[in-house]
Image (cartoon, rainbow, N blue to C red; front, side, top):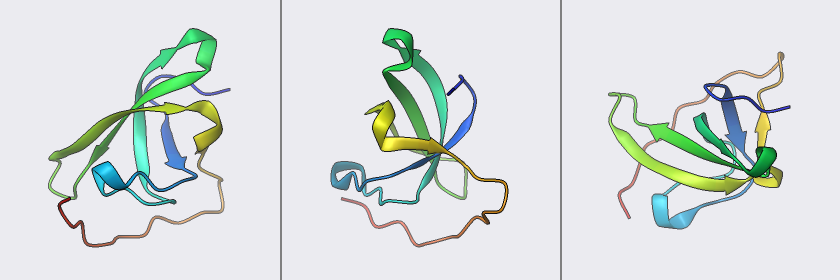
Length: 76
């Protein structure tokens, strides 16, 4: 079950925010019994890249055996 302030991974690209499958964000709000979440994405400097409403099927929890990866952010 997803929770507010939980770190999550997106399962799909979101081109309007230059987000790609595998990017990591934090749930800042849950909607409709967890059917969707407001997820905040930040750059390495801590600048907000986007706060996006995402259906629950397009986000998942990070697995304990996964490692973070860094990529360059290109502005849309």
